[in-house]
Image (spheres, each protein chain N blue to C red):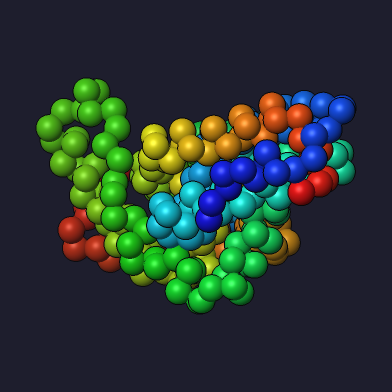
Length: 93
Length: 192
C-alpha cells in the first residue's frame, strides 16, 4: 500500500483528528464523525497512542469521583421526598 | 440552612402536577446534584446546604419548567443559588482547589496485579499533582466533566459560559496535564 492510498484509507488527517479528539473521547462528537475518527485511530499509531494517553487520563480522573456521604444523601432524599409528596403548591410559601 | 417546616408552612395545593414533575425530573438527579455541589463548594456541609437550597428553588419553579433538559435546568438553579450564597456570605465559600482531590477512590482492586496496582497509583498520583497545578478555570471544567460526569452543555450551565468555552478549557487543561506527565520523574510514559 503506497503513501497516498494509506492517507485515503485513513480518511481524516492527524490534524483533523487532533481537533476533535477530546469531543470523541467525551462522547460529544457528532455521530457521523465517530467512525472516521475511529478508523484513523486504528490506522495511525501516533494518534492511537495519543488517544490512549488521554483516555487513561480521563479514567484516572474519573476514579476521583466521590460517592456522596450516605447521611447527606439520606437527608437530601428525605427533603426531596417531602417536597414531592407534600401536596403543597410549588409557587407559594 | 434549615428546611424543617419549609413545606408544612406553605399553602396546600389541590393539583399535584408540580409534584409529579418534581418526582419525574428532580428525584433522578439527586446524586448528580450532590456531586456537583461538592465540587462547587469544596466541603460537605456547604454542599448539603446548596443542594437543599436548589431543591427548594426547583420546587417553587417546577410548574414553569417545560420538561426539557432537567439536569441542565437544575444545574442552572444550583449555579444561581450558589452565586446568592457567595454574595451573602464571603468569598471563602468558593472551593479550595488544594483540598479537592484529597481522597482517591480505590476501585476494581480485585482485577489488578500488585505490579499494575503500583503503576496505577503512580499514574494516578501524577495526574492528581498535575490537576492541582493547572489554572483554576481549566481544573473547574475538568472536574465537572471528567470527575462529576457532566456533558459539555451541563458544565456550561453550571459555569454560565458558552459550550465552546468548556471545550476550550477542557482541551487546554488536559493538554497541560498530558504534557506534565511527560516531565514527571515519578512516571514512566512507556507504561501507558
